[in-house]
Length: 236
Image 1 (cartoon, rainbow, N blue to C red):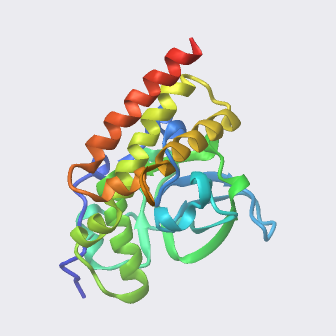
Image 2: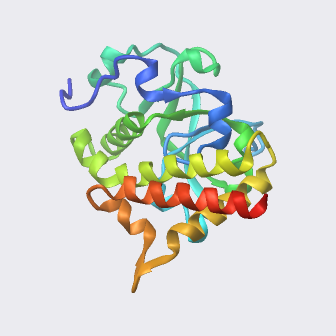
């Protein structure tokens, strides 16, 4: 059976981001792939992908929740070309061999593993998704469970404001963290960023709510860049 509403990616660059420097600074998002994760069953290290919605994996101050819903990544014994994605293998999200994880690798969308946040280190992240890749992942994950192929526009509408927030967070982190690879230092900058977003700009309204408004992202970005400049000048 072919499900015509399932999206066929045109190539690796459309859905995957794998620049190592950028990967370290990006916020944690749906579809992020991590290697060398300890297996609680003792069968050796696992490779996993986050499957939870961005809102579902983070709590107060932007920190990851204690346990993050993930799915196992493994060899599935066959290559699945992009143009065949709507034709079957609905429980799989194939991973491009160019990501360096090996041949015939895929996220097994129905093999769940809750992973403690302490194991999801930035240095273990080996791949992430573009914004469009996130929406395609969400579409395929939802379809794997319910056999309903919602249009990508529905996922974009539900998640685009979180994607915008994550991109601004990365800009903030790069500004203050520079070339550091100290995960605790980066976590401090992440906490400061989310404290900035949680600040009330009107009675009962946090700044982050503006991401949901037309033109809100550019307005918040302008405020954030002004705040970055102010803090940098104060620290100088």
